[in-house]
Length: 178
Image (cartoon, rainbow, N blue to C red; front, top):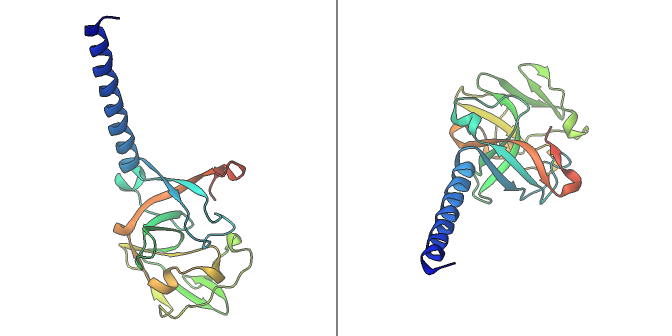
């Protein structure tokens, strides 16, 4: 290999590395982003220190969170950069907590993901409450150990960054989030 072809090889390699970095950042910013779970608020659905992937594209193109979605949101308490919680109520819903149960639009919400743990107000929010159309109400699945919407209130859609859809680490928990 002569000096000219070696120089071309180095130049092409640098260009490929830069393009790969730009592509990876674009994917992370607009399509899919990995998250490390910082707390136990979603146990057992998501364990502490699990790593999950969140779809960001659907929210960029106008999709809105649905009841039951697991979403990544900005932490309104600033304890963590982001939180991951389950959407319990969407815009227009009325939410109430009575006798350890969640009532959505005056009907008891079926929540198998809480494994029978009761849901009580935590003092930060007054119930019943109506969720504005530009917002959602989120709670952790681990209801007895979750600082969630019961503490910080309603979450504006502008604070929702993605929909969690896959656990990729540890490998023993590899699979779809439900």
